[in-house]
Length: 66
Image (cartoon, rainbow, N blue to C red; front, side):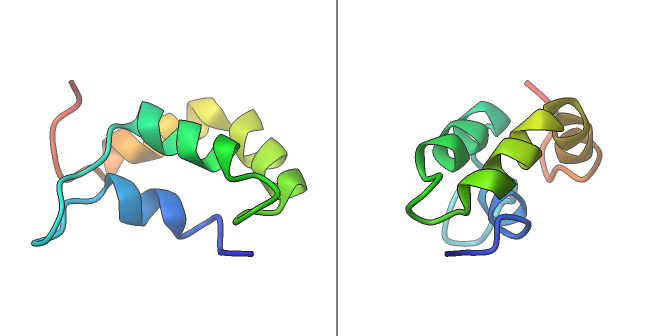
């Protein structure tokens, strides 16, 4: 199982080799990968804090919100 706390930051950040993912895509991927790459209980808790996750994504985003 991968670290759920690192995945969103890596995905929604701009890197020289990739574009930033939209927050919706990041949340969908995390939900889809529950049980395969991420602990299902941690995914449930993480998605339960979606409002806070979105706030953090905007606050620390490399790009302005769409």
